[in-house]
Length: 92
Length: 312
Image 1: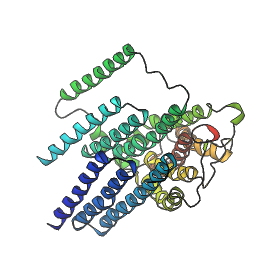
Image 2 (image 1 turned 120 degrees about the horizontal axis):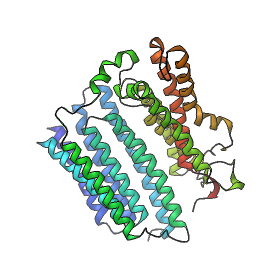
Image 3 (image 1 turned 180 degrees about the vertical axis):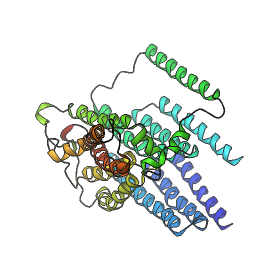
Image 4 (image 1 turned 135 degrees about the vertical axis):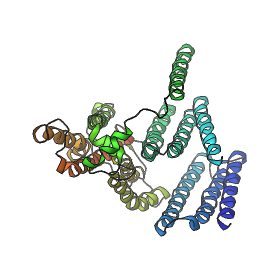
């Protein structure tokens, strides 16, 4: 029950992030939409899968995957932000 | 029902991503389509119970190749004259041949006898003499070792080909463009934080290949990424292409493989034959050397020929 609720909530953030990616007008807000999907969406899905993990190592691996995606996502978002600033000037 | 629904979504996604790649208006869009196709293909391989192929697809097909063509695409678009699209007749011919190949494959697949003929049973019965637990690695390293030896040689030739693109005055310099360094930037942080973890993961995946999904190509690709990352962040300069240790690292895999293969002619009665007692250690020796070679060769392929000019 807890698992299903968490995974559904995570899936909701992924859908919302995808809609934002398609609908938002400029690069910075699109990045904003995507990072929500990565951080919260995947975080909730991992949280939901934790009770289903067969062993502690499996659960730790799930958490590690989430941490790595956070690290990569945050870095990519920063780089895209910096590139936007370089190409279009500072945000208004 | 939910499984076949998932497979259907995967199959449609694969077609959709492929179509998006072909229909993309920009080179960049086409590369993104290619990456998406690779990621969906990775999931498809997992669903087909082929985790070894899935790992290779993710590491080399989707990630490694994508970095290389993305770099090429940015170089091509930065050039003065955009490349002319091939003539319509040529494109139609290519589409026709591709459709014919796909159609023939689909026809053959749908008309396979049940159960499909294969050597899987023979591989499984011949698994114990190799001392390995992963039948895929047994095929790669023992039953079809010649194919793998040639594959490893191809990597060396690929690096030759890329290096030979260097202008004469840059021959012997460091590979790739000069990357701007931002000592406290986000990329520099990632290049410092990720490699300790990535190197362990790469070595683990290469090592575990003997008994579980994984192996030299997948692990080597991860190691290559961990090596290239500090180059791109401008933290470390890549070694010169005239650097002897670098060249040795690239050639180590095929050299060790060939040496073991030739020794097999003397001690085990055939080229690439292993003496039964030493099969496992010899395979591990070759795998180790190959991991180093794959990592070094892929890193040099991603960096490209020596140019040392700032990336636009």
